[in-house]
Image (cartoon, rainbow, N blue to C red; front, side, top):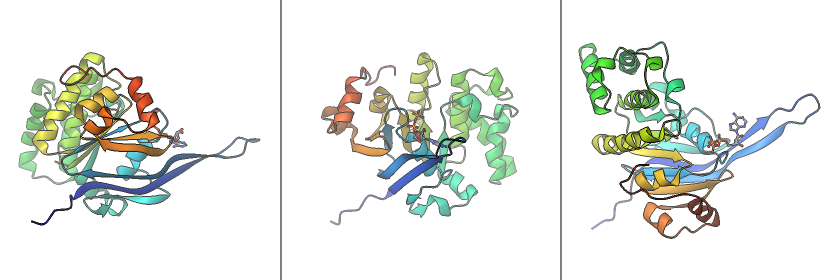
Length: 267
Ligand SMILES: Nc1ncnc2c1ncn2[C@@H]1O[C@H](COP(=O)(O)OP(=O)(O)OP(=O)(O)O)[C@@H](O)[C@H]1O
């Protein structure tokens, strides 16, 4: 029997990114190495937890995965295609973000209904099917239909994040990039959003990158974990292996600083 090579949905190859921060009148310009030779593969249907302290390069990597930022070296392939070779529409069918702050990621002048209609109109989904698709997506993310005409400013943080998740999923992308999607929410709402993402992952057969500084959350939902430190991946392993026997000193430090009461509990 031939052994099949797993086919990655996401293949990050030797990505580096440096920012140049211009100095003032008397200050020289400064260079920040945000990412150094980062390589990560994510198999279809799996969730990658990307963890590390503030400033280690997680959001820079997310923006490069989304094709919103260019690496200096290396490339990102989605479904075997370089993300930077894809047009905007093509890209948005393959990969969608969910960001930390649901209020600033939604357009305040669009109602919930219009927020979800917009991608369907841009992608020319059959006009007769759009409204039904919006309503059924609201049901799937547990957002009440009676609030479909509300505006983001009239909603709670958790409700807004449900709308942002619905918008990310409405075109059925195979890959979702969640950049700290619960850290701006009340603790009581965080677990609801995590559990919603877990349910939707099954239902939509999603692959997911979940960026967090919270190892407890990552332990709850990741299949594979990458630990980043100062722009580099210092350890990547299956969730079980990493939590059972962390190999890198920095991972051990992160673990010892985190309470891990999670499995099945509130996070
Ligand atoms: N547009 C930019 N211009 C200059 N430097 C930047 C820019 N974006 C990020 N950086 C720097 O690059 C490094 C990595 O930042 P990044 O935001 O990717 O880290 P992060 O791990 O996502 O941090 P956080 O968890 O706080 O969001 C940091 O030193 C940051 O100051």
